[in-house]
Image (cartoon, rainbow, N blue to C red; front, top):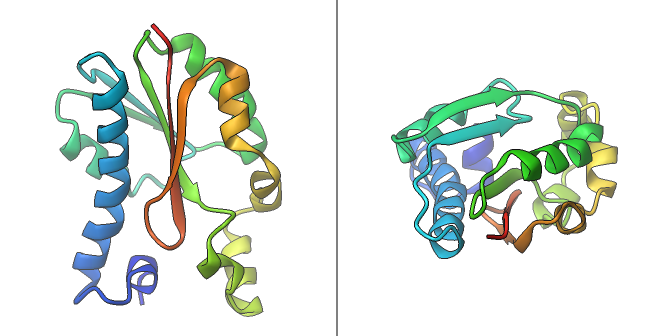
Length: 163
């Protein structure tokens, strides 16, 4: 069973579950950008910590005017990356981070076997779960920091560089 289908068991197929999971976080990014960007066109998307990049094609399809660049990184680098994103983004630019939600009941209730399996693919999971991402973004200078559960397992945290 796919991760998306496990997260959205009511979906009729794996494809439908993938569309729901991907659509939720893409919509969260788009809605935040439309609300706070002052109608700035999205020209560049930097996907940091993208694992093997499965979601990059969804970003490219949703935001066809943007160039999508991706890079995988360890979780302990998130604070430095958030600070660098603040430096690089233009005023009105949006940062969006989508990952497992430390508050997800689904993740908190995983069986020990499944949790161990998940952790085996995420060597920095404990460090990530201990990081207050929203506060990290605020300390970097971002405003309009919002976190939304985009499916039962994942959250998308969005923020804006002030004008």
